Amino acid sequence: MNISSLTELVDIARDDTPESRNMLISSINNICLASGREMSSREKDLIYDIVAQLLQAVELQVRENLAASLAEQQDVPKELVLALANDVIDVARPVILKSKILEDQDLIQLILEKAEQHQLAVSSRPDISEDVSETLVETQNVEVITSLLHNGSANIYTETIDKLVDDSQDVENYQEALIKRKELHQDMAKRMYGFVGDALKEHLELRFSEEDMSIELEDAVAQAVNDAMEETSFDDGLDEILDRFSPNYTANARGMVVALRDGDVFKFEELFADFSGLGHSFVTRILYDEGPNSLAICCRACGVSYQDFSDILCLLKNNANPHIFASNPLYKKTMDYFEKMDGEGAVKVLNSWRESYPPVH
Image (tube, rainbow, N blue to C red; front, side):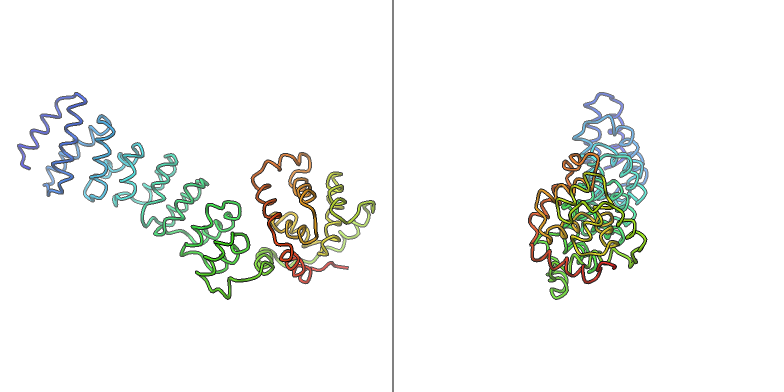
């Protein structure tokens, strides 16, 4: 292409009809850009100046074709690349995914300023940095984070993966992708082993040592609880306080439900400790610091019925309006966990806890 050809393009540009503008950009794309032809600096400056000025005045399909052509070119003015990246997602996607002109700060800005579809495009971009990944995680958008985790080339801080492992107990979408992440360490895998399904357990056993990962239920859950706890000694003074409460409650499931309905939380804790055979300090950890699965294990091991466990769980979570927690997704997840739990396995876990955290007399 010679200078006279560029002059012809300029002549087309003087016609301000939409048809002419579409034809102009299409001609530039087909003749100059898509062809891969070497252009002089003067030619490039003129071409990109025309494109930048007419970008928003041309049809969507023309912009899509242009973005696809420019996505992998490295001599495009950054302002033009940013304009395309901020366009509608069908235009922006190839640029976000492929353009090496976009830097971390540009990608972070897109995440902060644009909606989910642009964030998903960034999450799929090859070799994104830890800072970009962290910004994606901070959106708290499950779809975006899941997409990021499935991007095997994305760099993610180990601390972030560690947090997402904990989150994955409630967000099952994360689990499969996390198991495949290079940042997943064995201690994280062991924590996941305590709550993922059988199919994912097999994946963990294949990736890590089967000897280390093929552990009984009591080891998996007990280790998770032990890791989360610091050694504490129970304040004997609280025993005296608990002893002052009325002895009219029975140390069984219904007695604990009655205590909770009466708003007698201290009595409930005392009954639960007697019922489970665990020390008070460990009981308070289970009830208030650990997730509801630990409570489910204790109740299942002690033969608590499905309905009684449901009442205990809802009253603990919202004593004033227990029916509100029953509509929480965590309620259904916990009840499913309780119902499907192996009773013998739960007994083994509880026995291991009793050995480690016996009552203080």
